[in-house]
Image (cartoon, rainbow, N blue to C red; front, top):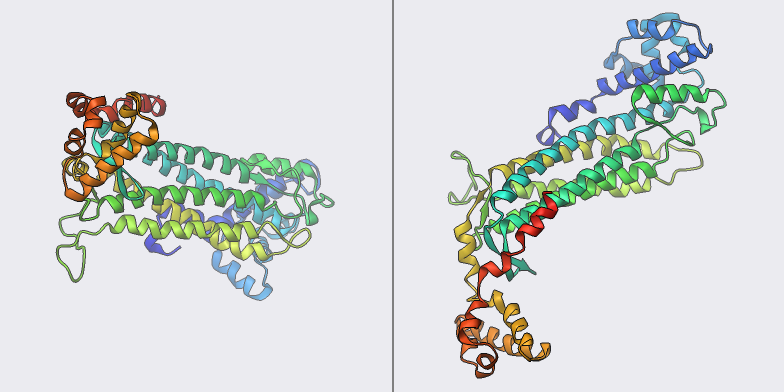
Amino acid sequence: MIERYSRKEIAKIWEEKNKYQIWLNIEIAAAQAMEKLKLIPKGVASTVRKKAKINVDRIHKIENKVHHDMIAFLSSITEKVGNHGKFLHKGMTSSDVLDTCFNFQLAQASKILKKDIDEILQVLKNKSLRYKNTICVGRSHGIHAEPTTFGLKLASFYEEFKRNKNRLERAVKEISTCAISGAVGNFANVDPRVEAHVAKKMGLKIEPISSQIIPRDRHAYYFSILAIIAGSIERVATEIRNLQKTEVQEVEEFFEKKQKGSSAMPHKKNPILSENLTGLTRMVRSYVIPALENISLWHERDISHSSVERNIGPDSTITLDFALHRLKNILKNMNVYPKKMLENLKITNGLIFSQRVMLELTKNGFSREKAYTIVQKHAQNSWKNNMPLYESLVKDKMVVKKITAINLKKMFDLNYHTKKVNIIFKRIFK
């Protein structure tokens, strides 16, 4: 991922120096197990740990000749450790190291992503409680529906990110496996106890059965979860973008004093951060298809998945980390305009109370169909003539015969729509 959308902590996980260090840790752990099993001489692991140095440039130089990254890596280590180097990687295949390393890196990156989600949850909780009773209009199809509260909007996002946290934790368990099973995965040249030792050292689980590679359905699941999290980010970003429209103006991204909104129009304050998130989340979701296509490989393995994962592993986790961090800051610093919310709520002259009036009519003798027809007629009259719905209804003798003018007026009470807010909040913030 380009530097513009990368944060240092997670980007370091995917740097080649870190990757080669993990490879070395895997080789050392395997050597330790082999020593205990008397498959290689004692002292190999300790000597390698003391003398081995990661030299990225040297590895690349060797790889340019041999065209094999694992052989280049092992050759560079052997140059440093001498004769002991020949005992490394005994009975193992490249994928044993590459796959175990890749899963380890994904797990490392996921710790940062989980922290990001925790921070978003905290901000959403604080904001939900702050705006718990801030009344605004709810919209369906972009059209005014019924009153709700801004706190409920935010609480909905909070609950979704709680689910995302649980999903990510399950996805990490899915990919946190280690395979040291040798060519075609049958342990012909490597003892299964070596795998068990490496898995324990790396904090991973044993892969029950591998075909020289770890099955890629695990990774498809993981990247699918990242895509779902990206979808949740876009859901919030889209809501902010819509609420920042000039004609809505209920919420606004924080705009710094020296910030510029447009190169041509000095008055502009655009929701650029939320728009940026919409674009970045498209990228994360786009990685799901290649991850799914990686499931099906030729026979026990091929390397068609390798080039895919060298891209989508770093890019998806780095991009998602950046997006989560940006979303947290947007939510934390956004401007909220409760007065504008009330103002917008009133522009339809009470049409948002139509359902309550209809239900009251059904309680007083009308069929639902008849009540719907009556209220719809008055709603259309109200909209067409820009008059309050109450004024249109109160002139209808059929309506006031069933509901007195005083009781009809009570149907237009905002508090009616917020009376269950506490119940919802107790469900979410137990």
